Structures are given as structure tokens and as C-alpha cells.
Length: 285
Ligand code: MF3
Ligand code: CO
Image (tube, rainbow, N blue to C red; front, side, top):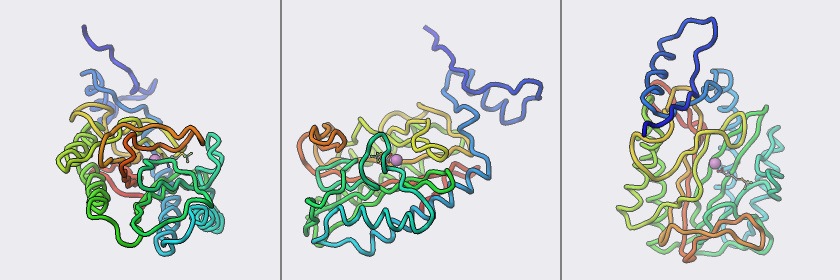
């Protein structure tokens, strides 16, 4: 049965087709999913997201230079809140769909959406993901880093390193007029080659005018599938890679925190990117 064509890209009434229109319409007519026009950011919007990203990076740099054994994750939350407000911005997680804090802090077997707490004290040997998202002048940026507290087991160190490599390989696989599936394919290959697994239940996402926009950026899958990548699209890549099973569950106590089913460690790195004529550019460097 022929696949029904989803007409995300439509000619503008009364205007002649541009070369870009013709290119995207022909890809759409072959049955591929293409973006809507709204997903192509203007240079002004990209500049706004870039400025948001500068503050977001400042937050992560601040965390990086202060994080250590003995502090609580609630302390990290205070750093993020204060740095962000001091720079005229807003922490995007705060009150987002009821999220109670300004940042996600996910330790060891926590995959993502860990809630900062006075009770959670960082110890030597822990790995932690700090996921920071910023709203500045209405523009959203989103990035996360892993931190290793003191000396970490070689296996956990490898998990953190391989996950970072997955982000870089995913970024390099994303080409203008390629497909979102090219990214996930590169990430899954590298993770599984190293004996790790890719979390399926959460993904990267369009970002910029809202916290979470289209497309969904899966961190696994086949080349040539998913949405067409067009210059001007802004999205995150944020692979969550597990040491053991890819299966996860949500902590019933808080309804947020995603934890590995086998309680083995998980790692994640994230950047916000803009697609250009030459490939991805990082907006949260
Ligand atoms: N920062 C996460 C992401 O990468 C989203 C966190 S939503 C929150 O998409 F509510 F938990 F903050
Ligand atoms: Co994100």
C-alpha cells in the first residue's frame, strides 16, 4: 500500500516556488517527512537562540568549576537559579509541566529528569548529568554535561566517554538534506559496538521558540528515515546511553525521574544545534 504523503511543506499562495521549495517538495513527494516552514528559523531567531545558548553555557561552566564531592544536588539547583537570574534569563525547567526545580541532576542509574534534593549528596565515584535549559528574550537553549566526582570506576569512565563520542558522531552524521535517522543510526552503532545500549523512551527535540518542538530526534534507528534536515532547523541531540539494559522506569515517588531497569549507570550529553549549509553548528558550546 502506498504511504500517504504528509504535506508539511506547502507552496505560499501567490508566490512563485523558490529553488528550496522545489527541492523540499520533490523530497516530500517521494514520501519522506519534511519539516513545516515554522521549523526553519530566521537569522534573527537563530541569533536569539545563540544568545540564550551563551548564558546556558555560562551556567554549565559555573557548575563545572564548583561541583565536587560533599555538595548536595540542591546546591547545584541554587547555582543554576542564581546564575540564570543574574544574567536576565529564566531556567526553563522551573515549573515546566510541574517540574519543581531549575535544573535536572541525574546521578548514576538515574537516566534523566533527576530532581535536585538536599538529601542527595555527591560522593567520590559518582557520575552525574547536569541538564541546563535557559529562556532568554523568549528563546530556548538546552544542553547537558556529565561530571565525574573524584575517581570513578574505569567502566563508568568509559560509559561517559563513549556517550560523548556518540553525541559527536551523531552531530557529524547530520548533513543538510540528510535525515534525522542518520543521527540515531550513528549513535546506536557506536554505543552498541562498545557494549552499551541506547535508551529508546526519550529523545532529542526541536528547540528555540519553545522548549520542545518537532522533530523528535531518536538516538537509534535507520539511515534515511525520519524528518528531512533543512538549513535553519534548530534541535538537540542528547543520547542517553546505559551500561546494561536499555529499559527504564519512572520513579513513582516523584513521577519524573527516569531510572535504568537494572539500576546500572547511565550517561547523557546534550547540545543545541542549528543546521547550516555545511552541517551542524553548536549553539551551546
Ligand atoms: N532538559 C530536558 C531535555 O533535554 C528536559 C527537562 S524537562 C524538565 O529535553 F521539566 F524535567 F525540566
Ligand atoms: Co533536551
